[in-house]
Amino acid sequence: MEITYRIFTWLISGTAWLLLMLIFAPFIIVLSPVGSWIILPLIYGGLLFYNWKRMIKKDTVSEPAGFSRKQSTLIWSGIVLIIFSALRLISFWVGKSCYFLGINIKYYFIPLFLIPAAAIYFRPFKKHEKGNSFGITGIIAGALLFFISMIHEVTDYAFTGNKLPIGYDMPSFMQERFFPAGAYNFEIKGGSGFLTNYAEWSCNVSKEDFEKFRKKHGYNFVLNRTDVNEDKNFGPLHYSDYGWPKPYYFYNNRHANGGGLTMRYSVPEQKLYGHYANR
Image (spheres, one colour):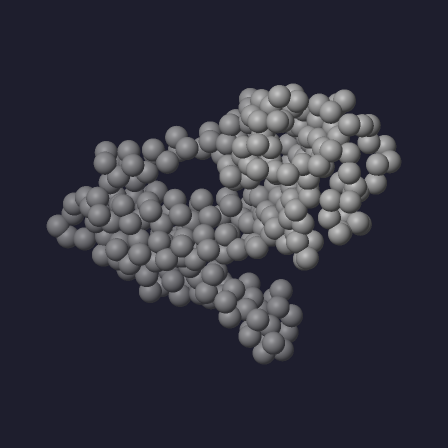
């Protein structure tokens, strides 16, 4: 476990110094006489050397030697928070939600959180001179990284399938507003980011389930009309009858900024089309 402890302290230190360096990176780039691709790695390497010299090298096992569940909890908490936040950022860069066997792939990682709990209880780290400091630093660095991941995270709603998967990434209140009970054969695209949220979808739904859906939510669908609202140009659910088999029901609740909810239910297809944007 001593090797694991050392790896964790390096990971915590490396993350903390990297975040601190990134905060001051714009000033370093402006003041640097040479390229940032040279100066920034040199500064980061110097910070890691300083950290090894002043912290890790002096972080010896406390005397008398013993195990500390307190330090283990702090260290593991920081590591879990850092790794979890880093994975959130990676998912943002990938920009694609993944489902396997009808279940959000993130659910398969839940059992991994049992590993820290078992390690803290059965195999705690030995008490170290600077263990508390590393643990607290890890938690602070992980919390900052988590905040950054929240700002930059983009959730992808893209999905095609007969039924929605377990753990589908769209918020449940949106699913309830957009998809009638009994709906199937979904085709969805869209996503959410910092202060933005949009979706475009279609799904098959029986006329009976559609009637229950619009009554439940108080949606004022209008039959075969294109003059429901003064906005005449919004697509893809625009007001033109071209290409739309009749009868159909149309609902439009758009705002001046272009946000809002538009839906059209095609009776011959028994299919609901929708578009939503929060702005």
